[in-house]
Length: 98
Image (cartoon, rainbow, N blue to C red; front, side):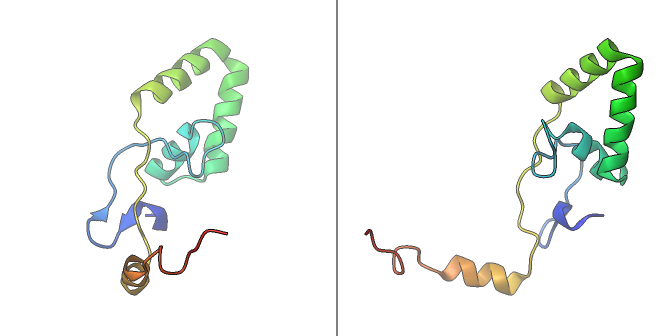
């Protein structure tokens, strides 16, 4: 399981999502790669070959995936001490308008 899909307090993030953080256009290929534990480049290569061989079917399936799949929620996946440190920082104390 990749580091980006794990939350320290809730466990693994389950389900199929569009991964806009690692994706190029809408994150469908990156989301599929993360869900099936493939490399993103491999899924993009398969999508490109599929686009050449059967253009309209691939466009239809990709558009359906854009509409049906939710975006991957942003979760914190770092160290608990680091999270605690940043939550304690007061943004207004160190910032002053110029």
